[in-house]
Image (cartoon, rainbow, N blue to C red; front, side, top):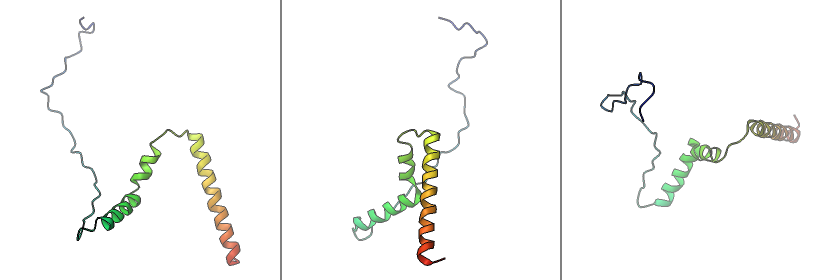
Length: 92
């Protein structure tokens, strides 16, 4: 079956497309004196500080915007109550 639209040019695979180089920020830890446990602990800390696991957990399922707003409001309320209880303890 032919293309009904004759103005469409066929794809030219020989065409040079300019592409940006892909750079990925990697996390690495050096293992010293065959101490893998310390290296693993340091790696886990780096991953947590970088927020990679949090990103993966957030992308596991879609969260509706209304649910996200409700969670943010609940987190703000708990932070506020925590601050109030600390202020009450110190007597401010």
